[in-house]
Image (tube, rainbow, N blue to C red; front, side, top):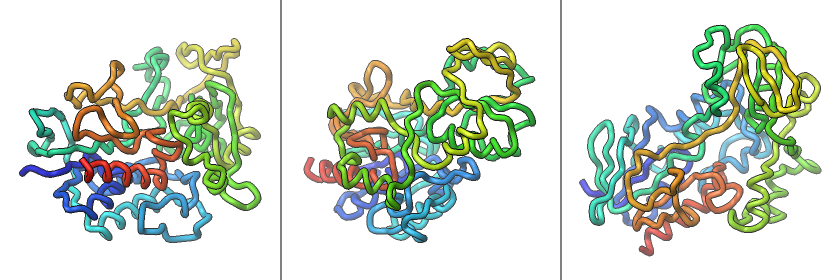
Amino acid sequence: MLYDVVVIGGGQAGLAVGYYLKQTDHHFLIIDENQQTGDSWRNRYDSLTLFTPRFYSALPSLPLKGAPNGYPSKDEIANYLCQYAKSFELPILHGIKVLLLTKKKDIFNIETNDKVYYAKKVIIATGAFHSPFIPSIGSSIEGDQSIFSIHAAHYKNSFQIPKGTVLIVGAGNTGVQIAAELSHSHQVILSKGHKMKILPGKILTKSIFQWFDWSGLSKVNANSFIGRWLQKNDPIIGGDIKRVKKQVILAERLKSLQQNVATFIDGRTIKFHSIIWATGYKNTYEWIQVNQALDKNGQPLHNEGISPVNGLYFIGLSWQRKRGSALIHGVEEDAEFIVKHIVLN
């Protein structure tokens, strides 16, 4: 069967484009490798709470239940995404992993673990947080059975971490949240790669994201001077940093690891027993074998989500069009923008 559009990925980005595609006469399908809508959230660490309030954490035309200014849990978001897909009767197939994407003449061939799907146009909505990244320094302790090593993507709760000192590498929002949680039960060292820039969750009782909207910062173009500056200076948002400053050992950038001894760039050395890599994600796209789809580093070539390859689109990437492009609420405008482009082309 030939579809007008196939959306690869059924997370918030895929659901948002599905919502807008549903309002067109395009025959489309969403395919997702997870077994259930929302699993990408459901499988994250137990205590994860979004740093965006509920009023800023919903997709188009379906508010998130609960106090608007409260902060939803990851399970709340997972269940909401399930509800969203059902409410708008979005055509989703689960357990479908894409192995290869090619293009022959004007038709995309999408080879999966199930079968080959064919589409005139493809939207890649696999998101910005897909493949956990551990820097090369991690190879120095690879295979060392005396050290418990895990990426933050696979962290669940404090019971998972053996007794003793825990080194967390990466002081973004995830690293700070995990450090705050583990500080109740472990001695924690948090290694920061750069000076931590901190913003409160609220200013004068209003969410920081409302201030972003009122000031225009949430819609700053990714390629503008301010947009490029913000990408390099993304702040930590919320109150966990207060506990971290009181209960956690803050260390500089990690320089080397030798067995269970960490050396930092200022020469400081600290012994540890476990290490958690809160070092983000580096998405891989080797499965996309379409000329001009990727740059020399294997990353998507696009202008605001529109690929130079006719009929190919991306959505849900960090700073795709603006600061909020990878956030649940922020993906709405990007989805509408891409579907409008599809309808007109």
